[in-house]
Image (tube, rainbow, N blue to C red):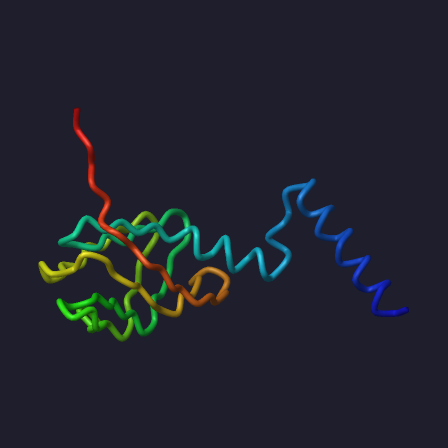
Length: 129
């Protein structure tokens, strides 16, 4: 019975957070918002990491790419990378990268919140007509 009351209370807190816009109080949604605030763009030759209003520490950043035999190889590794507010970093990658996986521990330097970043990126091709 106590479990059902706690579950019902959590449900109403989540609904209230959605209605009032304070959904960042729920830890699950906080981690999702933290991951989304780091922008990433891959064009086949370079990876562009950009931040908005949140400064980040990317700990144990690893970029993986498949080789010609579809085995994943490390093409970039960094122990710690600090991205300040409205900062953009461009990482040069080898030419054989047709898709990449970016993995790191993402730490918000303002509030100390942490999230695990795992993204699979394909090259973004700009179409001109």
